[in-house]
Length: 95
Image 1 (cartoon, one colour):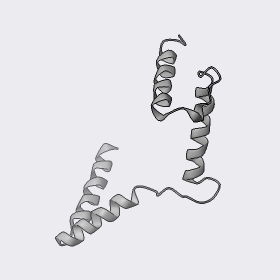
Image 2 (cartoon, rainbow, N blue to C red):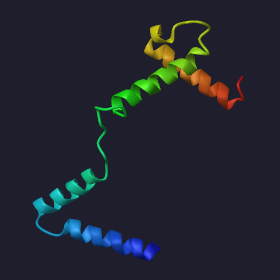
Image 3 (spheres, rainbow, N blue to C red):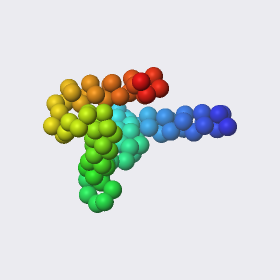
């Protein structure tokens, strides 16, 4: 299994490294760009909507620890500090 994977990787490297310097760098760049799918910013499963959902979920979770204070009116440092406190409490069994 590992030997076939090694052969495949070496073959890919040979393919990427064949040609002149400009072509080699272009091949490597194209290959690296093909490894990552870009985030979509439209539609119901867009990155922006997922980010907003995660933010709302964070607000709900943290609001349980604010004694009625509006989480959305807190400063960034207050939110990060609260996140640290909640994480430490969870590690210590909720204390």
